[in-house]
View 1 (cartoon, one colour):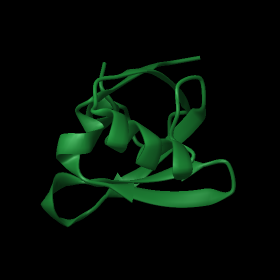
View 2 (tube, one colour):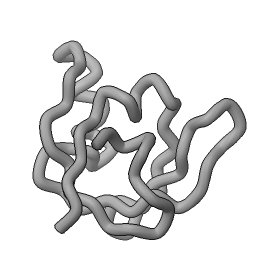
View 3 (cartoon, one colour):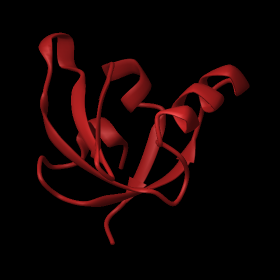
Length: 73
């Protein structure tokens, strides 16, 4: 399942990310990296999502969310 399909409020663990190296670095800077636990909070305008990553909140666009695989713990 990809991160755009993860249920709101359900904790998921990030798996493989299909992205260019520059995007992988930026996501890592935001705390979104393989093995991290994230919780989708709610949808944003345009289909993106607000995510809880540790104590941080991060908004990602739908096309980015579709590149991130997740697994339920």
